[in-house]
Image (cartoon, rainbow, N blue to C red):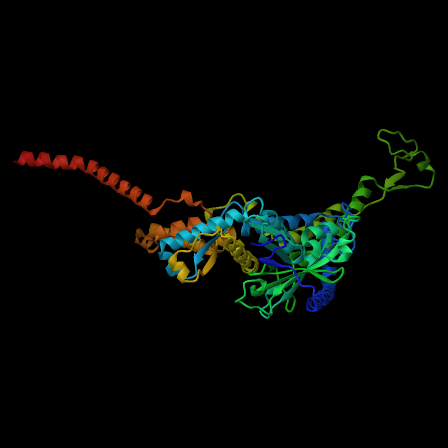
Length: 556
């Protein structure tokens, strides 16, 4: 059972010289990682100022106290980027992890085990438990997962921390802001080390670490409970791992909390599995942090902001124009009030003596802005998602083709999130639930296979990626139907086994399973239809049979 510190097991640190040296080294390691992030912080700040204003202070001035509730959208003149980021998060959520359906299933790694009914039932039950715990109100998965996707769209890196509930069975999730986290990669390019730099008030530090806090905190907590202090949380592979040990030394990952004030280790423990699920949108060589759609769209976002500023100025001039008048004193009595009568405003010949200053073409500016808006929406996948929703009149074949195209365009993005984010997330969840005793006992055959499993994704985007099969089947059927109609030979239709293709096509396009009849129901319907046909044939043949009987009777 984990504690409120997020440990699989906790141990109070020793206050010896070796611990102090290790603590000082961890602080130096953090300072080195922080020094490498200067360019990233500048880039992320520029993005946050324009599409995620509430985060605009979290990269450059995190060590400084911010004024809560202050305005942070001074750089924003057009909200297209902000709206596109929110839609990006909603799109990934609906395509990858829709909360109203099972978006993944568990299977044994060895498909032969599927023949064992007990194994099939075990995986089905575990999958149900996993979704029940994940979407429990106390877990807070939905909101934190949405923050994960928005961080991915804005900064290219999303970080979710998964541990158990304090004092009760279950899982909790917390999206950690990128401004707090410094990442380390292993030799295979996977994130296996995280240093989190965060702050707590003196009161919070005492609640979390108790008397392990340094004297600088314990001595002022009663007088200044809200004074803030900084801490580090290091999670990385354990170099001195001893699998035979039952304490935290036998756990795969180190967990160390260090107080910057006083340079003291305030808590020490470990994790059996990596507690962070971290994903990158795209990645450049030799960079642990991802690159985001916002980075690609940043030139368009900045251009659009400047265009919006110019349009606002031009619009103001058009609505409240600058007036040009002859130097004859006419403006001394000039009134802009509605209904005013201005004497001397025109010459005796009827020529106006006061005219507005010509302004630029607002329509041209609007067209330029529309180009940038389209580019931003394309980058944040908004346009791709609208392929089906905004085109109302389409044939079934056109719907399939559009769905197939969308699956092809999104495949690289979705594949990376499944491998880097969802896979480690599920592994961590299962480890927590198993150690809490919330999973059923394994059946014998699965236990002999050491419980190895694999995840199959059944989200909308996973089905969309299979749309190529359904589209190919529909095109094949259309060609065969045309051939059968022209040749009069329906035998060509026997090539396709629709009993197999039909249910899979229905699954690809998200038809609810209860709506699809099972094999036994289909057999009953066909048997009834066959009986009706036999009865109808008998009825149709009755007049001819009666005629034959009469003829035989007459002959006899």
